[in-house]
Image (cartoon, rainbow, N blue to C red; front, side, top):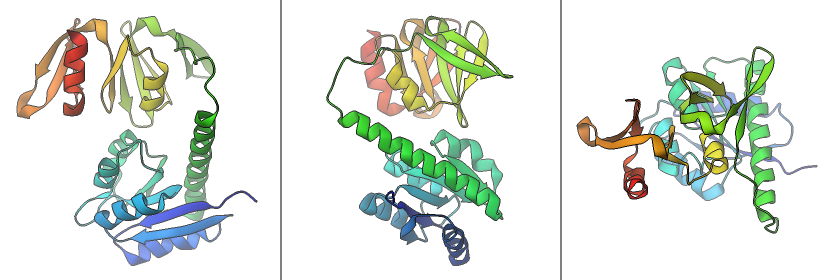
Length: 249
């Protein structure tokens, strides 16, 4: 039998935590390795036990669920299923690489669907880790086209035509030649597969083509942005501002 899926449950309501635990009892090969009733404890437990999957409430005292992801870092989080009674957080949750978003109250079928997605994300993460441990061979080439599926058809967008990429929920949107193409792909994956001499990820939800950047701007409130040659303005994170300024020299 394969290793169990190690799960942490985070919710400030005891009944809600028990609700998730009861449903996990009906799933195969699962081990609950921790529970927390607030965001601060959730961060400590996730960092200490390194679970495969986290069921994470959004609204909690202190750090909320979104703060937990931001504190640990979206790229360092295990497969995350947000649970909440409010749907207005969905886009922000998927922007943080959530594998699913469960609206309370949810039934057994909907929970099982979310858990299957989380299990697949765990398995994919382990496969990537194994591949990274393989001895280095010829480097994988950077993308020159990106496949886009729409209405049962697949078309290929040339990377050379892409001006910038933005995150939109579980999708990345490719902006090319006045058209927008949605692909179900993580921004991190696209960042790794695009030539870093041509593209740069300037924000958690933005990748830009460097030769199209016209100016680096100081936005109101102390934030930063880039203006492209066509006038488009895109957010720049403070953490990436200095590197972007260096690369634009």
